[in-house]
Image (cartoon, rainbow, N blue to C red):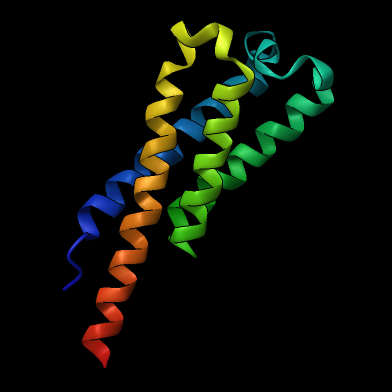
Length: 121
C-alpha cells in the first residue's frame, strides 16, 4: 500500500482547486487579475493564455500523471507569481504556501515512487 497516498491526493486536490479558481474567476472577472501580470506582458491576451495554462495545470495535477513534474511546474508557477508581485506580499503571501505545497507534492511523489520501486524489486 502506498504510504503517502492520502497526502499526495490532498495536495493535488488543493493545488488544482487554486488553479481552477484563479482561471475561472480570471475569465469571469479579468479586471481583478490582469494587475497581477508583470507590467511588460500585461495584456488581456496574455491573461487569457495564463488562465488556459492554469486550467491545464489543474487538470494535470488531478490526473496524477507525472506527479513529480506537475508539482515542480506548479511550484515554479506559484513562485513566479510571488517574485513578480513582491510589492503586494499582503496578498501573495498565500502563493508562497501554495508554491511550497507544490514542491512538497513533488518530493512526496518522488519518495513514493522510490518506495513502490523497492516493493516490486
